Image 1 (cartoon, rainbow over the protein chains, first blue to last red):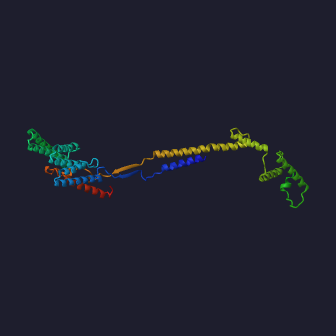
Image 2: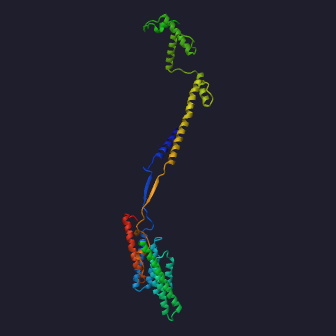
Image 3: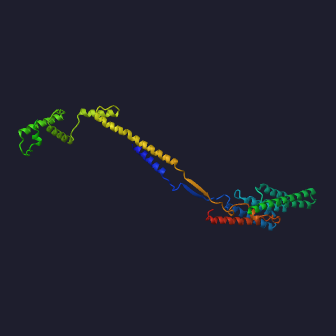
Length: 191
Length: 194
C-alpha cells in the first residue's frame, strides 16, 4: 500500500514537472555573434610582422651589397606560417618570390631565379597583381638571360638569345593581360 | 407474575425499610431468572417488568467487561477466521460478513490507487511528449566589415609597375598598416575580446 501511494506521488510530481513551463514564451531568440574564421587575427598580424622584418633585413644586406645574405633573408619569408587560407599569405609569398627571383638573376643564377618564379606562378590559387608581378620578373629574367648570353664569350647561340627575348615578351604580355583583367574587375566591384 | 405495578409503578420503599415478604419472593424469583439467563437458559416467556430488569442486568454485566466467551465458542470463531483466510467459507455468519466486507475493501483499494497512479503518469508522459518544443531562433550577427577580414591585397596595392617589381618591402608595409588598422578597430569595437 505504501508503495502504491509512493508511486501515485511520483506520478503526480512528474505531471507537475511536465506542466511547468520554464520559459514565459515558447520562442526564445538567441543572438549568435558571428566570428568568422577570416577575420584578421593575431596569427596573421604576427606573420605579416615577421615578413616585414625579413624584408628589412634583406634591404640592409642589399644596401651592403651582400646579395647572398639578402637572398637568404627573403627566402625565409617563404617558410613563414600564415593562418590557413589567408589570402595575404599568397600575396606576400608571391611578392617575396618576385624579389627573390630578382636577387638570384642579379647574381647570375638564372635557372634558380626562373624556378623560384615559375613555382610561385604554379602554386597561386588565383590571378592577382602579385602573380602579374611574377610574370613581369619572369620576363626580366628571360631578358637578363638573353643579355647575358649575348655578352658571353663566346656569345650564346643567336636562336637561344632570340628565344629568351621572345619568352621575356610573352611573360610581360601575360603580366599585362592579368593586370588588365584585374583592373576591370576592381572597377566593376567599386561600381 | 402479576405484580408489575408493585415493582415499577408502586411506591418506592425507604432505604432502611425492611423488605416485605412479597419483595423477598420477587427478588428470589428474579435472581433465579438471572441465573438461568447467564446459563443460556432464558425462559421463553416472562413478564414485561422482568424482561426490562433482565435487560438492564445484562447491560450492567456487559459494561463491567468481564464477559468471556466460552472455550467452544471462542475456538469456533478462531476457526472461522482462519478458514476464511485460507479461502474456505466461514461457518459463522457474523464472521463471514465482517471478513467479506474487509476483503472487498482490500481488493478494490490497491487497484484504485494503482489505476490512478498509472493514469497520472500516462498524463504526465503525454504532456511531456505533446508539449510544443521550445523554438530557438538564432539571429546571426551581420558579417564583419571588410576592413576586419583577411582578404586579397589587390585592391590595396593595385597594379605593380615593372620598375617597382622588387619593392616588396614597401608593398608589405602598406599591407601590414592596413591590416593592423582593421585588427585594432575590431578589438576596440568588440571591447577587447579577441
